[in-house]
Length: 122
Length: 162
Image (cartoon, rainbow over all chains, first blue to last red; front, side):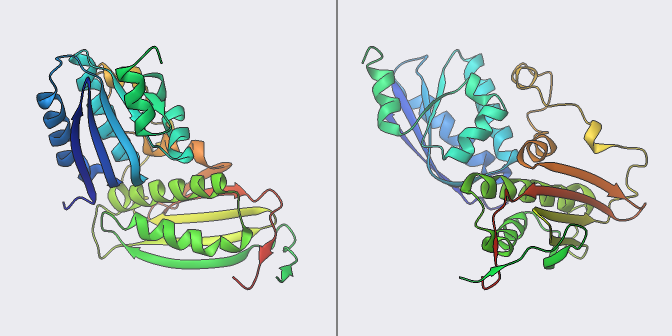
């Protein structure tokens, strides 16, 4: 299935970042899995925190939530934290309802997420 | 702006009715068209986004589970207003698929179990629907299966000229 989701991976010090855009649904599985692999492989720190940035995402459905759960499960097995940034108020609510926000710290934007990770005392 | 008096309770007014081919992704068409059909109510953004998510999830279920992703079997969508309620009925032909199966009784998704492998990562659709709308119901006549999504407009008036 063709995916309407795109992912760009960047590795900042201590924080590999996956910037998602488009639609996070079931068809995004290959894109998201590949981006996660690329992010953690490129990271210099073995247990770095992975940032998922949703600022350019306009649609997440239940199958997309399932993908995020799978990424989180894998990260936890690897003793990595996952944080998220750029979610709209509606999708923040969905992260709350599903309890994803109990396991994924949410930040308003990518800058604040990266700043918190790289300078946690700030 | 023309303010139109709401119909009395018990006299539903159809806002829109349409069908979609049962193809993955067509839930996006449903949510966009339902959003257009209720634009005149000027719903709060939060309420509109909730309705859109509920419509998308219910339509996905109809496409996938009700009609088995068969494009030639349409999903029917009807939007009506009854007093301060907007009712979206989404119908598939899966009413006879699993006799005795109550989708509302499906296991509640548990994120901890999902993270530990005790539940599939999937299974969020009905849970999201229930949490997005003010009320919902499911009816079946043995062939047609309909999910009814109800949201209350909170007194928002309808602009007929939309």
